[in-house]
Amino acid sequence: MRVNRLQIFKSSIFFAVFSVLGITSAHATEGQCEELTASGNAEYPPYLWRDLSRPGELTGAIRYLMDDLSDMVGLPIKLIDSGPWGRTQEEVAAGRIDLIAGAFFTEARKEWMDYVEPSLMLTQTAVWTSNEKEINYSEWRDLIPYQGVTVIYNSFGQTFDQFAKTHLSITEVGSLEQGLLMVASQRADYLIYEDQPGLIFAQQLGISNIKTLPRAITQQNLFLTFSKLSKCNTESLRRRISDALRIIQEEDRQSYYLAKASDSFTQN
Image 1 (cartoon, rainbow, N blue to C red):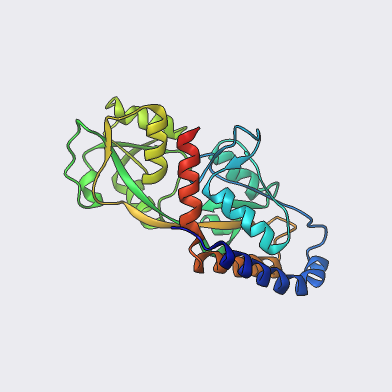
Image 2 (cartoon, rainbow, N blue to C red):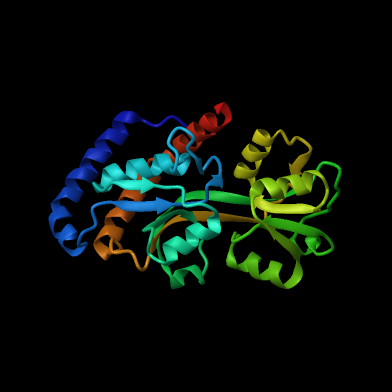
C-alpha cells in the first residue's frame, strides 16, 4: 500500500506540536532519560534482522516504524542487536535495555515489562513441514502424533503455549535456521513459527522443499514493551508513545514498512 507522504508529514507535524507542549514537564519526571534503547528478535525478517551496513544495530519493518516513532515523540531510539532472543529478554528484564520492539503478550512477561498499545504489527504463526511429509492438520490436536520443533524462548499465545506444553512433543532449538533445516531434512515432522519470517529465511537459505499448512496456529499482535526497571518508563512517555502508535496504525503505515523491508531483505 502506498503511503500518502503529505498526510504523514501533516500528522507528524501535528503530533510533534502536540507533544512539545508537554515535553518540559514530561522530561522533568522522566529524569535523565535522553535516549531510549530498544532491541528485538534479530532473526525475524521482514520485521527485524541484523543490519550489515551498521554492525550492532537491527533493521527491518519494525526499525522503520521505530524511526518514525522516534521523530514523533521527540526522543532518540537506538535499536541495537543484543544477541539471541533469550538474552534480549534477559537484558530488558534487568533494565539494561529499555524496550523490546516486537513481543507477543503473555501474563508471565507482564511481571517484568509493560505493554504499550496499540500493537506494532499483526503476525500469523504457521505449521511448517517438508513437502514430502503429509500431516492432516485442521486443529491443534492433529499434531499430537508428530515430533515438532520451535525456536527457544518463543511464545505463540498463552492458550497454544499451554496446549503445546501439555499435549505436544516439541523440541526447542537455538535458531530459526536450525529449525528450518531440521524440517527440510525430515529430522522433525513440523516447525512452529511465523509465516513471513519463515518464508523469507527459507528463501535466503535456499530451502525450497518445505511448505506451510493451510490453517494457521494463531494470529498475534507484536507489541512494544517497556522494562519495568527502565528509568524512562513513565506514564507520560508511555502515553506519548501510545498516541504516536495510534496515528501510525490509523494511517496503515505498517503495510508500507513491511513492503519496504521485504524488498530490502531479498535484495541483500
